[in-house]
Length: 395
Image (cartoon, rainbow, N blue to C red; front, side, top):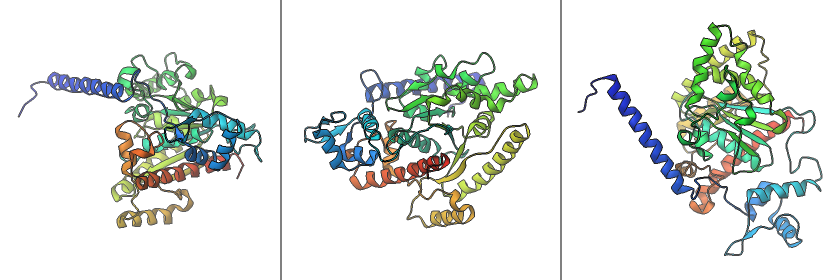
């Protein structure tokens, strides 16, 4: 058994392992997404495109035959395939003849305020990042203008969208640049376009922890001001450019999470229905309430449009989980989303290649496995979309 003689020896090994892993991950990305290591969105079958748009496949076929809208690609099997850009173009076309405004472009209208959704929990494995990533992508595919923000220093949301923090963010580029106390950048300089129309990204990395370290120093020096407004003030710079902001919060109740809570108009708490997770959530909720009281006492408006619990990694055949789900629904009523996110090998297998289920092709899985997972995700995310619409007074 090897023994570390000094702290420096252990540090050297940890640093070596970190660099080795980062190099291997970079090589994996280049092999998965050649030639320039950038991701692209897959094409959708006509049935998938019609479902996303909320029309019949036969109607899309008629538009194609009439020469209206973008021309889909034709597969070797003579199937029509639509890109995400094609779907967005079809939205614009269909909106012109829609019965009601917003049927195909559901975003903000005059008087609607920006929806900022904080996805949070401080228990690992609660499905927080998976939920945030699929929510942001689904809303973008449904026609909302979405900004996804990775506030988690572990940066899993960032990696899912094709950005490797160790290589792509060597000179900054996270939200920390816009909320730091020393010469903050404009948030517009750190927003990145993604390979999905309507979806922009502010990536994350370990640099975000600097905000946790600097805030106490700034407070002691009297320079922090109302630190919990930092995220809100940064987002105000791009308020008119988006309909929805989805924030993947850190798995802890630190200064970043407090600032995100102050900015949020909606709060989504992920819950894995296991007893240890529920016990942990009890502490999380108590601490959150205490912190929100402190922030409110400082003059902040801590009212939110909505707050919901999302059941994640749920297995309907698991009797103990069902008892916990019934327990939670009895306690919290309609604060628990009707739709749970089911546990699925399809979602985890997609993650192995740094993709969401919306990005992988259905043929990569058995039809039953894929359909079950995608229906679960769509039900969750469309229920949240309805909350957004209700907040804007449309339901």
